Image (cartoon, rainbow, N blue to C red):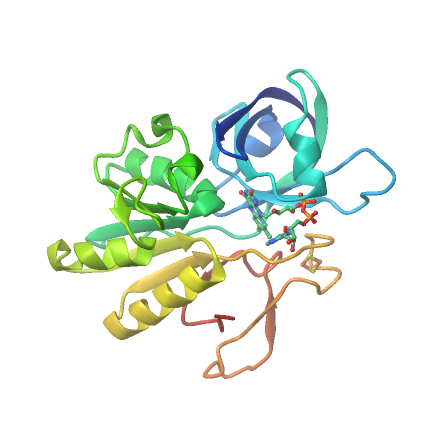
Length: 261
Ligand SMILES: Cc1cc2nc3c(=O)[nH]c(=O)nc-3n(C[C@H](O)[C@H](O)[C@H](O)COP(=O)(O)OP(=O)(O)OC[C@H]3O[C@@H](n4cnc5c(N)ncnc54)[C@H](O)[C@@H]3O)c2cc1C
Ligand code: FES
């Protein structure tokens, strides 16, 4: 069940260049939050009436973590928020990743700040006694979040577009370079730029991997009211049309939707 609640900021620190982690005290939301779901953050000024959506990057009984990149007006405001300040948020919203424990290899693939929902998912998979494989691609070393996020992962693989950290190339190329060592069934869970998502969807289609992707779209309401966050259904889908990222997603099986690459 979703809650609209005033939360208290416990932490709001930079973890990489222009990337911040915010920790909020909000048991109402954190207790029921699942990996893949997101929250709407509201802003108290009269100009920015629309909330901003952020994936849940971790949740315990009391606490919710978000990881956000400063890209524009409202995320710049967020970077200036102080510990102890209150923030209005609504959540948890949207659907979640589904983990089938009978699959042999659980592969999490994140591009940039798309890492956020996958950190939460990795925690859940580890709690279930399964060791996931985690691939994270960034543009360069400056954008790689603090290593403490990935310390508990034994099978973590970093890459960067300019080669300044980890594998030199895209996160998809890094995953492809590991494919010969990956046996049996594979489930991919991804979140990142549209180009990365499209490449993974194609790969998953060719190799018949199960592939779930968390989508981002510009959102106004975040509640299924404005129809502003559409994604086109795959043309092979019997009922052609559109899905709403905020209401039907943000997580979709890659064969269910079309990609703008
Ligand atoms: C379900 C969902 C989960 C998200 N999770 C995260 C997250 O965990 N961490 C994170 O950093 N960001 C996340 N985003 C994106 C985040 O909501 C936007 O970056 C944020 O709303 C930008 O607000 P702004 O006012 O700073 O930017 P604006 O000033 O509004 O825009 C600045 C630039 O960012 C682009 N932008 C704005 N909103 C989005 C969006 N929703 N998707 C893609 N590009 C956008 C604009 O086109 C513009 O180029 C998520 C988006 C969705 C839909
Ligand atoms: S953001 Fe309004 S319907 Fe999805």
